[in-house]
Length: 202
Length: 171
Figure 1 (cartoon, one colour):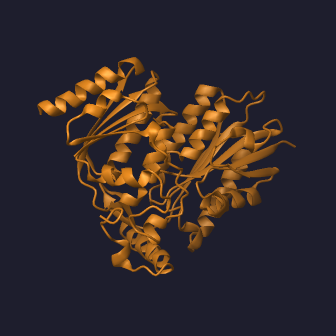
Figure 2 (cartoon, chains in turn blue, purple):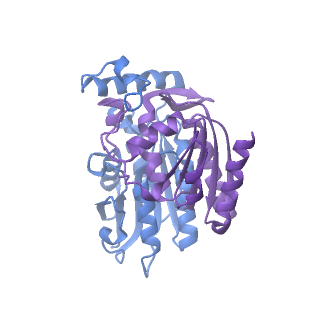
Figure 3 (cartoon, chains in turn red, purple):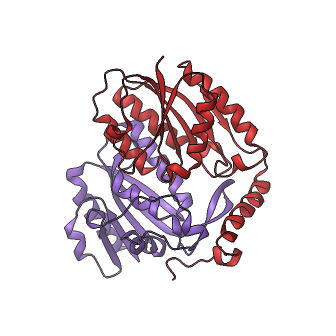
C-alpha cells in the first residue's frame, strides 16, 4: 500500500506543534505514514524517496503571514527534483491567531506551487489558535477535525477543513495573555519585562 | 530615517542621502529563525541568534520609510528577504490585540511607516495578486500606514528604484 509522507516544515521541528499535529494525523490515518522533520536547508533529497508515496502532507506554522522560509527552500528544491509520479500535496497549517483564515495566503502559496509544477493539490486543514489549542479542553475539536482530514487525504479527496478555539475575540485575548505570561514566568519574567518596548535594548 | 533592503546588489544606493540607509541582504549573514520564542519569553526584544539580523531589525522598527527589493517566489518574498522578515519577530510582543477586528501581536517601538516594495521575477497575475495580499497582511503586523507594491522587470529594477528614491528627495 502506498504511504503518506508527512513533512514537518516547522522551524522548531522536533519540539513543534506541527510535530504534534503530525502525530495525531498519523494515529488517525488508515494508510501507512512516514514522518520526516525537514532540515534547515529544505533539501528535498533529505526527505527520501517519493516513489512509494501517493500523498505528501506538509505540516507547518504560519510565519510572517506566509509559509516558513524552510518550506520555501523545500519547494524550490522539489521543483528541481525529477519525480516520476507526483504525489498529491495536502496542507496542515496552524497559526497562533484566533482566525484560521489568517492561514489562507500560505495555503494559496502551496496551491500556486502545485499548479506551476504539476502536483495535484489534495486537502487542507487550517488551524487557528494553534499554538495553544492542544493544551486546552478544545483539544478534542482538533482531534476530530484531523480524523476527517486524514480520511480525506488517504482517499485522495480534495477537501477543506478548519478549526479554532470556540471563543469570542475578547476571551481569546485574555486567554492568550495568560498563556504567554505563563511561558514568560517559566523564565522568571513578569508582564512588565515581557511588555518592554525596547528592541535590542534601545 | 529611510531604510532600503535589497536582495540584489544596487551599488548606486551606497551614495544615498544621509538620512537613508541601504542594506544589501546578499552581503549579510542571517540564519533561519529557529522558532524558540526567546525574543518574547526569555530576552524580550532580543533574538538569541547573534548574527547580522540583530543589527537590521531595529532599523526596520525605527524607519519611517521602507523600500524593499525582492524577487517573488511562490507568491511571496524569496529566501533572502523572507529569512530576514522571519528574524524580525523581536519587534513584536507575545501579547495579542485586535487590529481591524483581527487578532495580531502588539508591536514594540515600531514607528508608523510607509513602505514601497519593488517585486521582480514574476509575470503571473495570480502570483502577483497573492504577493500583494501577503504584503497587505504584513502591513498590519509591521505598522505600515501606507504601502505600495511595484512589479518590475529585473533589468529595469535599478531605474525604477532610482526614480523612487529621487522622488523622496523631492518630497
